[in-house]
Image 1 (cartoon, rainbow, N blue to C red):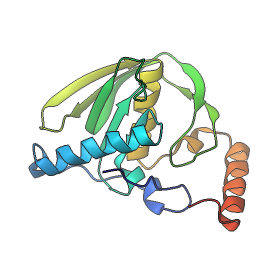
Image 2: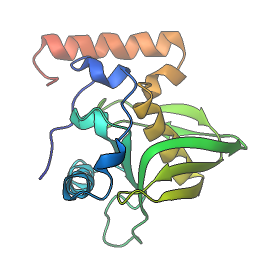
Image 3: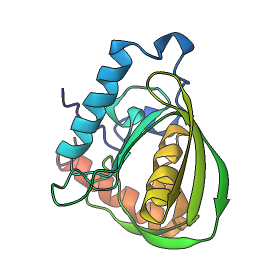
Image 4: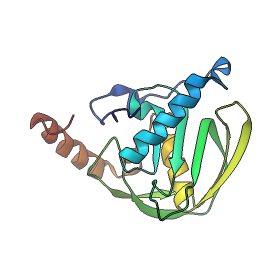
Length: 176
């Protein structure tokens, strides 16, 4: 099932920390179905990552595939449940966008390499390392789980300019 991706300024849950996935949810068909549906939604939206709050499910769950589902690229699927960044190193600056803020892209500074501790859908503790684009995607999606959008990494002026443009789109009925 493909979910509708919620839009910034139309959903307050995007700016609130998500709740941990409960112990009894691990290993259930419902959690696996949610993961599968999130990948389907992410691919349909042409994204590289999707956090559960972006589909109005307020849980600490994110899916990432830096191939974006492109047939000519090797899939690089990652599922992170209740993730925490345990190590960061280096620096990179690169353009980021967001499925919840379509049409807006800006340069964001992030760590070049990260190590994440999380759980998978059956409840096993995993550690995943990412570099470059994968590191950027992991940090971006974990930010979502903490109620932080990539706009928070921009200057106050750039952030306000984007908000104004979005408000105009809302008034024109072009932002749903």
